[in-house]
Structure formats: C-alpha cells, structure tokens
Amino acid sequence: MNLYFLVEGETERKVYEKWIQYEFPNLKLVERIKDIQSNAYYIVSGGGIPAIIVHIEDAFKEIKHHGIFEHFFICLDSEILPYAERFQTIAAKILEIESKIDPNPSFKTHIIVQHCCIETWFLGHQKMLRRNPTNQELIKCKQFYDVSRYDPEQMECPPGYLTKASFHLKYLQEMLKEHNLDNKNKQMVYTKTNPFIVIKDEHYLNALKARCETTTHLSSLRFLLKTWNNLV
Image (cartoon, rainbow, N blue to C red; front, side):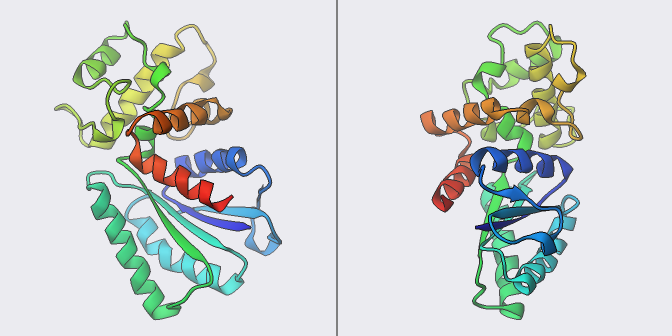
C-alpha cells in the first residue's frame, strides 16, 4: 500500500510523518516518488491556505502519472470556516479536477479537515491541562473554555485574538508550558516549527485516540483515525 499526503504546512508534515510511523509501522517514508516501490508514503507541504488548494490539481496529476498510489490524503485546517463548508469546497475542487483529468481515478481521495486547526486536536489531551493552573495566561484560557471538559473543536476565541486558530495555538502553548514547568528542555515547548512535544512518541496520539473513543469530541480527528483504521 502506497499513500500520498498533501498537507497544509510544515507543522502538518512533521506531525503526519510521525503519526503514520506509529499507525503504519510497515510503511516507509520516501523523499522522492521515483524511489517508491511498495509499502511507502510520500508527504508534500502545500504551503498553507489558499496555496494548498492550488496544489491539489498538481498532486492529482502526479499521482495519476506515477500510478503507484492507492490513497491520496488532502489535510488542511478549516480555520474560520465551518467544517462542512471547508470539506465541501475541497470536495468540489476534486470533482472539478476529475472531470478534467480522470473521471475514474485508480486511487481514492480522502479529505481531512483539521477543525479548526491541528493545534485544536492537540488540545484534546485531557491530562495535559492542570486542574489548578498557576500561569495567569492559562488561567484566563481555562476560564474562557475548559478543553479538558468540553470539545476543543467547539471552542471559539475571546476578544483580542486575530483568529480562532491563533487562540487555539496560544492555549496549547500555555497548557504545555504549565504541564512542563519543571522541564528545562526547550524541546518541550510547542511551536509551529517544532511540534516535537506532541509527536516525540505514541503517548500523545494515544491520549487523543482515547478522547475520541470515550467522548463525542474531536469528530474531525475521529474521522481521520477511522479512515486509517479502514486501510488496515
């Protein structure tokens, strides 16, 4: 089985690379498509929104040309849009491309919408948010919305933030900073360029999977996990 991933940015490229290793240990990451034989996956960054939407057609053509991929994953944030609207926008784009290039492609396309962003998913680790935080920024975040009790995907943002995604990122950073107060390793601080803390081992992903299995929360992440389970 060969998988092609077109992801929104560099954060997603690093995260999906690790998650695929954990979920599909028999697959090998390949940097160049021409080196793929079997049981491999290839990841390319689309350069954010809206650039990734432009890259969908190029990726589709590349997959069709090589004829070695069974599954094509398009992974991007919903950002300010409702989940369904972002999903339908990409679904319409795929139909448009298929009508021009190949109405019956030999591979299956999967649209993965991170609602509202990939950091929203990471907020789903229930044990990472302390019951009684001491960090004033985190206290404000938790007072606004307790992500350990309520669905992170339903969280909006308080006044003062340019976007909902920027607040979700700030909340995650403060949550992880508080959790690791006694750890002086800089790698334990989450940034868009270094998401190491949430991908360094399977623990974090397993905690998110448990949240999906025991609650109705994180439905967009559950969709990804269910899709992957169906590939096995």
